[in-house]
Image (tube, rainbow, N blue to C red; front, side, top):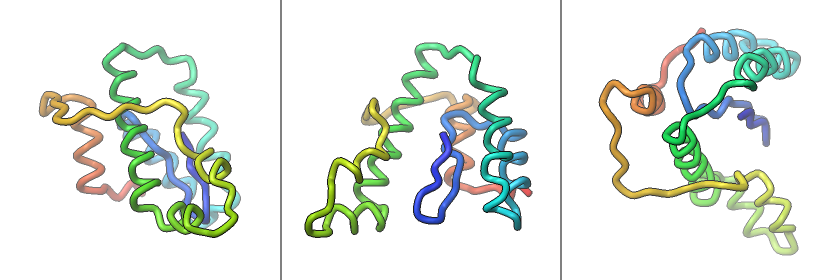
Length: 128
């Protein structure tokens, strides 16, 4: 999922694909405004026909839950919008995923694709 709100652009991954990350970040480097679409479209085209297992779908919903959590509890722009008198709450909440899931104490194998993503989220890589 591509998120491009308030000057930030990022690719929100549910599973880590290092080739896609390198492509996305190297295309964006320096000429960002002109390359959002060219960096994102090949990733979508490559993955749009992919099927997912029930476990992968469950993980996607958990990641969406964390995204919603971040937006509502931490993101300064969202918090500002929600606190602004007369703001249209529905418009602000439109950026949240329509379906999400929360689970306490989830556990995945250390070498699983899910933990591979968690490692990169905790210890960011330089993709370019």
